[in-house]
Structures are given as C-alpha cells and as structure tokens.
Length: 70
Image (cartoon, rainbow, N blue to C red; front, side, top):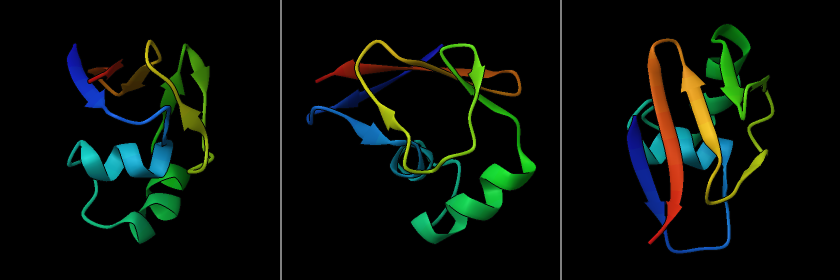
C-alpha cells in the first residue's frame, strides 16, 4: 500500500489522482473516473470532488493508497 501524505485537512479525489501521478492534469479526472473502477473505503466512487481525509484508503485495480497527514 502506497502512502500519500497531505498537509491540508483533505484532498479531493481529482487532486489525489494528479498528486499520485495517475493522471497528468486535473481536467482528465472526470474522463478517467468514468472508465476506471475506484473505491474509497471499500465503496465505489466516481465523483472527482469527493473529499479524502487522513485514514481513507483508495483502491484502483491492484493498487492501494492510504491518505495520511504530513
């Protein structure tokens, strides 16, 4: 599981995808989410504006990420 450290209260799913290097630009988030299966805390998610907080776990295929406070 890869750890993503943030220094803010939360990060949006679209920001997370860009920060983790999964997409190149934030504008690509909507298209990416419409074609890929992503879960947040085990629940399917497609909203790029979904707020991710420290402790949240995100799964994308075989990749897993955890948000932590920096």
